[in-house]
Length: 551
Image (cartoon, rainbow, N blue to C red; front, side, top):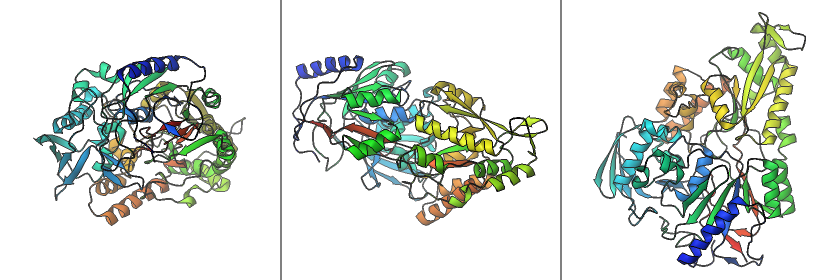
């Protein structure tokens, strides 16, 4: 917990801070930081080094991926969030109440909240944000799906909005807690997509100062920040003067910069570095598994060979995942047997569906007609090799995970299955998915709550969002599964909701549409000079409102 109220910076100090941030963003020398005494202090610029892809747009309404969430959590805020116990709590909203039939919601907003452009947060602003998310011109994916059931929004009073729904949505508050549905200044949005992408305007503890493409984003403290809770960790603005958000895609370079003191915190560290940090105590470690889906390999059932359920099961029985995780992740990742993250209370797990069994795999492939072998030992059918295309995003997969895929590739070969790993940048990876040029794919999907199952496995999700992305990458189309997911998303009975989601997950696992690996890895290593690191948003991205350097 913070120890004292921060002092507000003068205009001169703020100007000096901006200059320092620009300098830091472009250099590689050590960042000057106050001494190492135990006493925390206000001020200073945090240097964050991200290994995630640099967003093409800082407005998380556009597209909607985790790199955007990491940044947006510093300058945008949401209507709802999660507390330390994982309970959904109001944030910019004061309350949200559904009608008895679930077809309308009354949303009340807190008083006294302003955007960093000086305009007030009110019902008209929230209405403008919902319409922005639903506008095809925005090309939203994640946020678009989150507010899809909102048919219209009507301003009842400056602090009250009424939402008309096309169908009940028991995941609406979970959706409102996600950064891809964060609330932005309507005046900022009205500037147009290009300008808003460069510097979205929110209510958060920091604001976007400048963005130097392919290098960094300079975030400045919001001196007028009012935290929208009754019992904040501290009152007033953030302690830090700002954040220099650097993009360093190469894992070893990022790690070296942290060890040299050039940066203060990094994301996506290698598992061996995490294990070493935990053991040595030279760095601190934040482990924040993401909600929503587990990290998994999805099997494209829309085309051969995985349009045959026997081949899907054979692949899953053939590969050895646990051995790779144990050898490559140094205890920092635990094997999952679920479609959902371990932090999702409604997750269903079934280890029996994923037991490695070479004999069963061989029998299933024989039954499916893949009985012959070519000169390289791969199975063939009608003269065609049993060969799988596996595009891998190097922006979303750390080297250890890429090594795991190579081990899976090796064990699949023993069963006569060829896997062609294609390492691609994020843009090319999206292109391969859009072209249906894949048999296997590992795609993270973060969403608060089990509603992510509908996004990943409902037939509707084979239809691309306005951005062109579709989330049902296993391309499963099952009317029984659709019905379960539809009902699970609308019932007001918690026990019924759990029952329906459990049945849906069983169908997905028993259909062998995916191979769970582990929770979405979300580790951060940071300097022991920092205190107050640990607060996260509802999607487990860190926030730095309470963060300080020590003297």
